[in-house]
Image 1 (cartoon, one colour):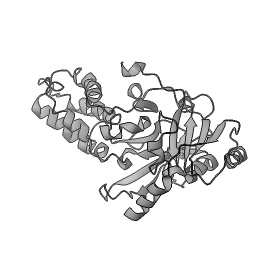
Image 2 (cartoon, rainbow, N blue to C red):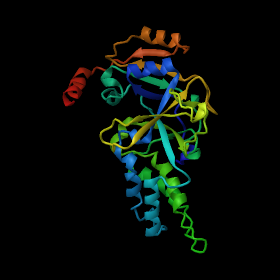
Image 3 (cartoon, rainbow, N blue to C red):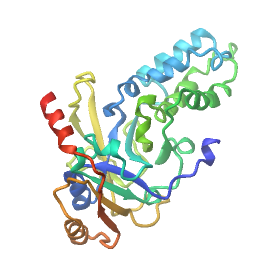
Image 4 (spheres, rainbow, N blue to C red):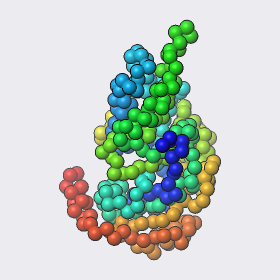
Length: 309
């Protein structure tokens, strides 16, 4: 199936802690995080792209020197200005034990939020790379190769007369595609990703703003920065966050945001607590709210996690 015809699910799910859910509702914001902070370390380093570009079937029309130029430009972001990516992650699977058992669902104490994807936008990212867009993550190598081949197959031969090798254009497109891939070990997440691109610190969507004061930028272009806390990523990286204002609809957004709220089996809060939180903050509390009844002892996972620290 071509990506441009990929249907976006009617409902997507976000597993998170109660505290984060409470912040979303009270602050009326949804946080997008820098791609540099994902739990798949090879995303940050674009290892998939480097490996895929070694596939002779994909790069038969690309000279070795051009391939190296592409890799250099992907590493340095040296194309059409500096480009950053910010993402919000969701799953297509409801009440998934695998995600309850991790920090996503706070080891059974968190919340699975069902959202309406079209609240943000109906666009697919691959057709809308410089703004908001949805994409289904590709985990299998053949799917990843297919996505990359859609780009490499269109590369025109270098034009020596004009001194053009097309590596800058290809690097630009490949880096966009890299945001749609993850290692196959993460396939159980069944991830759908909301992506926004930022070029030279400029974001086209006015619904992004900072919760901190920053007088160097117009209000609708503010960002704030915090030090990265992931020890597996180089210390000098700074993880950036953008907050989406839920009070303003995106360019093509429609409908209400929340479709359902599922409390983890061992969540300390009740259905009535959710209703009160939503109604007190201007959200519809008549949506489906219930508690997971998966018969699993989550306390064992929490104890293991505590012992590892």
